[in-house]
Amino acid sequence: MREIKYVEALNEALREELIRDPDLVLIGEDIGKAWQGAFKVTKGLQEEFGPERVRDTPISEAAIVGCAVGASLTGMRVVAEIMFGDLLTLAMDQICNQAAKIYYMFGGQASVPIVVRTNFGAAGNYGAHHSQSLEAWFVHVPGLIVIQPSTPYDAKGLLKSAIRDPNPVMFFEHKYLYKTSGPVPEEEYLVPIGVADVKREGSDVTIIATSLMVLKALKAAEELAKEGISAEVVDPRTLRPLDRKTLADSVKKTGRVVIVHEANKTGGLCGEFTRVIIEDAFDYLDAPPISVAGLDTPIPVEPRMEQYVIPNEARIIESVKKII
Image 1 (cartoon, rainbow, N blue to C red):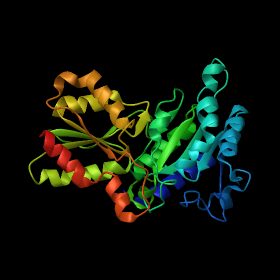
Image 2: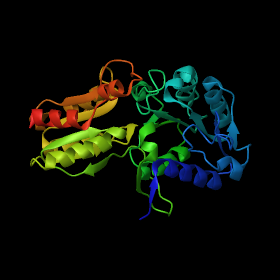
Image 3: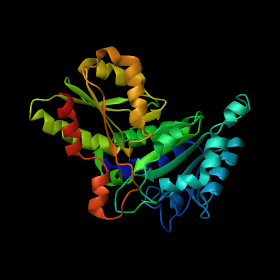
């Protein structure tokens, strides 16, 4: 199978869906041919589909998401790009009070089939205003689907599924992953929303990891294997709805679990995953769950400090050994 970059997989997904659905439009700051998106995800799309369907917008996140919501209510489908995930804070009313609630408030008579694409995470020393991981905020809001793909294969398949879903979807892409490569079929495929993936089989401990942390967990698992410790790595892929069964089944098999995400530990998804494990697999645990997460501080701009704040392979390995 061919290997392509994460950014190329996203670009392919957008192109294929623009061809498939004439009612689909892309909107966002600098997504057109002049800049082609902050991280080049929309490269070449405005030239192919024109400025009516790949639209550059003013610098207003509230306007971008508000436009997407309004257009979707008239029968269109919209993928809205927010240049940095931190700037979602400027569109919280449109996302959380409008897009997430319209289907419920109108008794199912209206839906909001939009995808809000954005990047997140510490990579490139962008500092405290452009490096946060805010996915847990949106997992807390009923009516939103929240996705964090870790591989090019998952990124393409899940983005295509997100575009076709009748509900509003928050689609989070880690900055560091854009240049990573992996196998992606040339033929069309979809990755189902709400289904986790076991990235590595193991028997001694389960490592539940999200987004970029999946890659770090896999590297940690390789090192642990050299010491005779068999680690299973599970990637939820979709944070809401969450595939509770796959997470619980893995913990039932191994009896131990380490949860890894980049976001701050306090209020992060480690707490939600732990709740699920306690509810669904408590009797199978041989040790308390352990969380490895970002420190409770804004992300520093200085490179060494930035790396100190976020989880790494060494912290994952240390946590695994603590409960083995």
